[in-house]
Image (tube, rainbow, N blue to C red; front, side):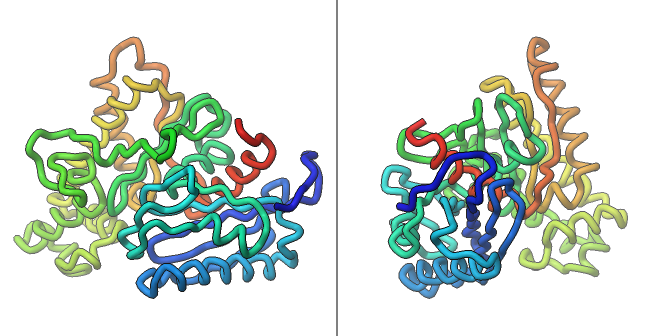
Length: 334
C-alpha cells in the first residue's frame, strides 16, 4: 500500500465509490473533500462477478483520469456496497440484485491500484456522509432511515459506524412492527419494510388506482409498479388522490414507530430520513412522522432528538465512503 503523510493540508486524494443496484459511481475528492473528478457506468451485475469487478476498476480509472491524477496520488478508497458484508474479509456476502455472492471487492481494487480500501454497506456509507458533511454534522449519535425498495438503516456513534464484529447491522427495515402483517422481501411478516417501503406504498397505490380511487395516478403512471416511482406518488398526492395520501400517511405511522424504537434504544441526537421517497415529499412526510413519534416517546426522551431530512442526496454515499477511507488511513485499528 502507498504510504502518505497525514497532515490536514497535504495534497492527498480520496475516492468514494457507490456500488448501487443500477449504477456505479466513483468520485475523487481532494483532502478538503472538494470534488475534483467523477465517473459513472451502469452496473450490469448479471454479466457475472468477474466482469463486474473489472467494471468497478474501469470506473475508478475513469474517475482518476477525470481528476488528472494517478493511483500514486490516491491515499485511499471507500466503497459502499449493497447487501450484507463480511467485514473481516472485506467482501460482499451476497448482492441479490447483482447476482453476486462472496465478492472480494476490496481485494480486487487493492490488487489493481495498490492503495488501501475501506468497505461499508451502502446505507452505512450514506449515513456516515450525512454525519461528516450533512444533516448530522458533529452530532454524538446519528441514526439514518432510508425508505426505498426496502428500508435501510445506519448509525454513527461517537464518530464511528455502529457495526457488528464481522457484519453490518442496523437492519431497521426487518424489525417487526405488526404481528402477522404482510411479508417483506426476506419472507418475514409485518416488518417495517413490508409496511412502509416505497415498494409497499407503490403496491397499495397501484391497487387504489386499479379500483378507481386514485384517478390522477392511474392517468399518469397506470398500475405497473415499475412506473409508480417516488415522483409519481408525490404528483398523485399534489393532484388530489386522497387514497394515495391516506396510504402514505399510514406508512408514516409505521415509520414513526421505528423512530420510537430507535429513540428508546439509542437516544440519538439526530435521526436523518433520506432516499427518493422522502426527497419527493419531505414537507408532507416528515411532520407526520415526527408528530406521531413524539406521541409515543417517553417524556424523559422527548427533547433529546431531532428529525431532519438528508442534505447530500446522491453525494451522501460517495462522500461517506471516501471519509471512511480517510478515517481508516488516519486512525488505523481504532
